[in-house]
Each structure stands twice: as C-alpha cells, then as structure tokens.
Amino acid sequence: MAHGKSKTSTGGGLLVKIIVENITKKIGKKTVLDNVSFEVESGTITSIVGPAGAGKTTLLKIIAGVEYPDSGRIIINGEDVTNYPPKDRDVAMVFQTYALYPHMKVFDNIAFPLRVKKLPENEIRQRVREIAELLGITHILDRSIYEISGGEAQRTALARALVRKSRIVILDEPLTNLDYKIREKMRGELKKIAKEIGGVTWIYATPDAREALAISTHSVFLYYGKVLQYGHIDSIYSSPRNLTIASYFSYPRLNTFECDFVNIADKYYVRELTGLFRIDVTSVAEAFKANRYIVGVRPIDLRLEKTSKSVISIPAHIRLIESMGSDTVLHLESRLTPSSKETELDLLYPGVLTGYEIGQRIMVHFDPKDVLIFEKDTEKFITNGKRIVSESRQGGE
Image 1 (cartoon, helix red, strand yellow):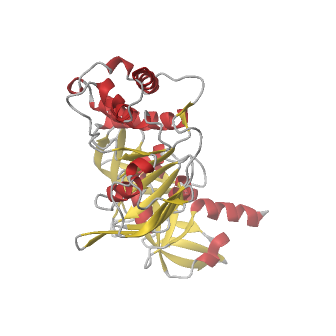
Image 2 (cartoon, helix red, strand yellow):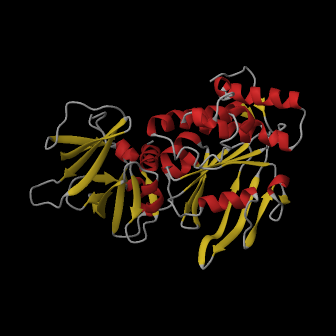
C-alpha cells in the first residue's frame, strides 16, 4: 500500500461526535433495538460488536439515515439529525456485500458518488487516483469487478466511501466475506488507513471480537437489541461488566472455574472447588459479598511455559489439537485426582505448535494478574487480577 508523508484529509479536518440516544426500533412484533444509547467520540474507530441478530446492521442504517427509529434521537455535533436523509448527514457507508456495480470498472465504481454530485471530470480523476493510491489499488482501476479478488473488492468499496470526503464512515461487517488470511491482513490495513486519513469518525460493525480488538479504539457491545457496555476497547476487555461480555471478548471460549470464597489464616482466597488452585484476594476482600464465584481465564492467557514464580500451574491432558487460521488451539481436560470433577479448558497458542499429541499429559500455567472474577449467581464482574495485584502491592508498601 502506498502511503504519503502527510495525512490525507477526507472530511475537511472538522471532527464529528455522534450521540445515539434512546433508540428503539421494531420490525413487525420484534424489538430489534431496545432503548439503545451510547456516544461515539470524534476521530475514534468505534466498533459495534455482537452476535448475529443483535441489531448491528439496523443500528448502522439508523445512524446513516437509511432507516428511521420508532423513538429516540441521533445527534451529530449537537444537531438532531434523526429525521434527516442520508445526503444531509455527511455519512458514507460500506455494506457487507460491498454493493459494487458489476457493469462498471473499478475506477467508475469509485467515481460514481462524485459523478452523482456532477463534479468536474478532472477533479474526479484526481480524487479517485489519490484514494486508490492510499488503498493500494491503482493497478486495478481499469479492471472489471469480475476480474478482482475479494480483498480488492473490499478496498474498492472502501475507496468509493472515502472518495466522498465524508466526515463519518460506517462499515457493516466489511471483512466477514473474506477468507481468514485476507481478513487478518485487512485488519491491520484498515487501522493504518484510519490513522492515515484525518478528519473522519469511524463506526465499524462486526460479530468478531478479535476484529474489534485489532481495529477499534472504542467499542459498543450490542446483545440482542440492548447495549450491555460501551467505552474504550481496553477497558471492556480488562473489566467486562458481566460474564456474557467477557465470554464474547474471548477466543476461543472463556475458561471458567467455579470457586468459593474462604478465609484461611487471616487471608482471603477464591478457591477452585476441586482444589486445582486458590487466588489470594485479601487486598480486595471487601468486594466479595457472596459465597460462589466464577474465575475466568482467557485461552490466550493459558500458557505452556512457566514464566514466573507467581503463576498457577494445573495438570491437564490434551484431548484435541486444532489449527485455527494462523493459531493453534489445544483442547484440554484437567482434574486434580482421578475422582475429581473434570474441567474442560482451551489454550490458544499464537502460531504453529509442534511437539504435542492427543492424550499427552502436560502442565499449563496462568498468571493471577490475568484472571477475571464474577459473582456466580448474578454473573456480575467483581474484579480482575491486575487490580488484585496492584492493591496488594500498595498494601505492602
């Protein structure tokens, strides 16, 4: 991809803040969006994350003005635009299917919104060339849509959106239809493009939390029509409001251990019920009001190597080895004794893993600072390992 030394501005440099306020939308008898509220900070890449059927596409269409809510408001830079048509919102949208015109060449697809505006042909050529250079697709401008790859089609659709110089760009699952290798590459490229282009606020819908973590600065977790949490992506990842959010922002599934809360020799612990481990939570003991808790460990935080003295080690045997794109997943079973209850675990290794086989007995490890703790009955987030360690260090000073 070609990059210039200075930023390319598509929106005139005036950043845009978007407020989504109490949006409700029904389709037939089904409530697709239920009192949805959040803010999109200017100049951010905000992902709308959630499973299929969560209402992501409907929400994007309402922000863009393609659909209208039954109630609630869309406010852009302090102005209520709820009833404005798309052309009056300065929004460009890229659909999941790309919606390219098959009878047009790549150049003409990108140029189409400029020709609708009846801009001079020399300006159209210049703007198409600039955006094509930024996205690395100048070599395909004369090709038919039938002659380009899925990744090139995705870039073409993005170029058509950006060439308009809109201040808001909305992407509806733009990587979903690509194979995993192209998808992994495009994650990095989209983030670079967003940094390269100034004056744009991005909204990005995806069912894939890994995409959100790789691309976005902020996120909204939409779960069957309701916003369960929104804010900075790092905050959602480290302090998910409940177990549902934590599980969704984990790949593969979140490893969970049922624990009780015990006092041993003037210290407080969450203790795995079969005796696999215990974690000292004395420094934050006041946060624990119930008897049962769930300790969550993401597969990426379960390790094959013992990295420090503070790590917790547990026995396991390998029941399946699975290649997942460029990663390897070990599906494990763990129990302390033959009569103990078996716990299923997943370990994500970022790369190709050799030297392991099904049935092999191993030790796996995790650092207490990487755990997430939830109350069992309510599934409400209680604390994370980083806070436990931080409070413990402060208390020891």
